[in-house]
Amino acid sequence: MSTVTATPVRATEGRRSRLTQALGTALPVYALLLLLFGALAITDPGFFEADRFLAFVRRAAPLVLLAAGQYLVIVSGHFDLSVGAIVTAGVVVAAEIYQDFPGAHWLVVTLALVAAGGLVGLVNGLVSTVLRVPSFITTLGMMLILQGGVFYWTGGSPTGSLPEEFRAMGRNDVFGWLPWAVLVCAAAGVGVALLMRSRFGRTLIATGDSDRTAELSGVSVHRVRVIAFVLSGAAAALAAVLVGGYSGISAQAGSGMEFEAITAVVLGGVLLGGGRGSVLGAMAGAFALTALFTLLNLRGVSGALEPTVQGVIVIAAVAVGAANWSRPRARLLTGNRPPPGSADPTHAPGPTDSTGGPTA
Image (tube, rainbow, N blue to C red; front, side, top):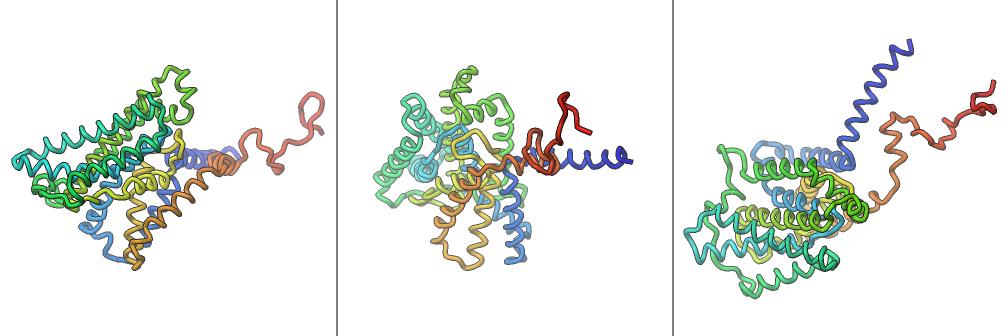
């Protein structure tokens, strides 16, 4: 009887264990996202109509891209505060390019922007790794350089315009119903997820966990981190194309997006300091943050409180991440049974005799 009943119990525990391990540290953000979607459905019954939900995804797309790029840098043990300025510079530079070369093909301009974003990331990476300047200082300086350069170049009022073909990726649909931004997000998500399953992804996480150990294992720590910065810069430039297409030209196009990206990554369960977290969790964090701001807007809460909300989220997420969850997680993975060696008195072994066996 015990064998017959134990088999399905073990199978259930195994499925629960595999599901929990697959979701990993991002489990809370998935639950939060479902909760926010439920609140949005109650507040606005038409939110999940196809066109409105896809419009929500289109709005979230730039932040999703930034979160994916920021994840690569944070999981390696660094920060990238320059991504918002890259977005602003990308929008302004695109407008200036079309003012001087009105016939430029949108794909050429897009690739040029992505290459320029990668170049900015390369500089960030080399300064942070080779010169050993803390990435917080390096990317903060790069942010100020780009912001100052844009203001000097445009006088605070960018001129020019973006042609319809360039803006199509940010605000038009493919097949007549699916926003291009959704396809871009999906492609970026699949690409980064595959990258993190590759040898590079494993070495990136190992570097963030312990760069000394990774270096002793033969990993080129500097090269891995520089690549992470390059990819983050390229993702920010691609986000600039979406922002320019959706919102148009502005000298404040990417203002504050660097902090939104960091908030999204932290909300997605990625450990500040590196070594733990998933890119899908970071992207889910971007959707959750956008859903939260949408809900607050529908509830009539002032948008001026968004930075306050971000601050609360970052502090709470870091506090939760710093807590020791090893025992509850082990109990969950083992089906509420304490792990081997646990000091749980309810499962403590009984007295033993001199041979190590139980006493009579």
